[in-house]
Image (cartoon, rainbow, N blue to C red; front, side, top):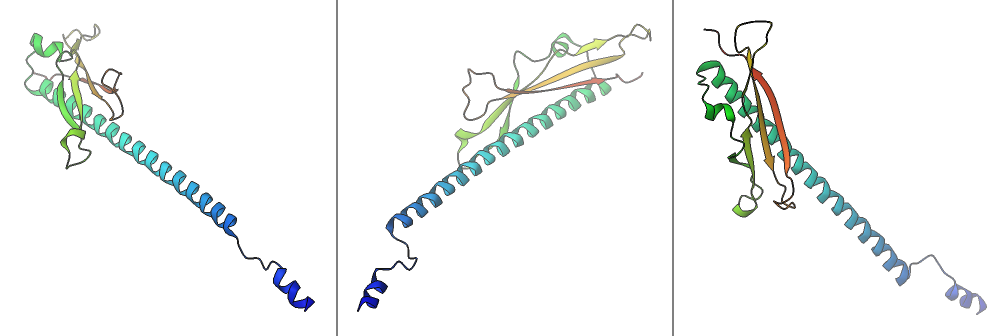
Amino acid sequence: MQMFKRLWHRDEGGIDFVQVVVGLLIIAIAAVGTFQALVYGYGQLNYEMRYRKAISMARSYVEYWQGRIHTDFQATRQVMNGNLARPEVYLLDECDPRNVFDDIYCKVAYGPIEPVDLETTGQGVDHYRIRVYVTWWEPDQSFNSPGHEVFFDATMVPAAL
């Protein structure tokens, strides 16, 4: 009888309710931390994609002005002053195709196109200096704060006549 009593009172390594709750709590905390890291990484990836697209847009705009200077450039005051006061607006990122209110737009502007005359050549305008700016705001930023900006510098030699 003493032997049966000892068998009933001994612990065989089973788990009790407290151990189950603590185990589930640890798993829940790890899951929340993992999902927060995934959301943060996804947000950083989206920002990097918008940044690369803004650089591509600035490069395209610079190439447009380089082509204009090389082919049919008319040095009028309006063209030479740039459009910093009235930048053009383009779609930078279509976040959710089903919702048009969450799209991210950017402002694309070019600064004054500066003619550079090197004194050593003596042939007038040697090249033009072009600078393009692309500015956008992330979804969690207010428009009162300074937005993200990418600028692209380039030069272009006019076509020889």
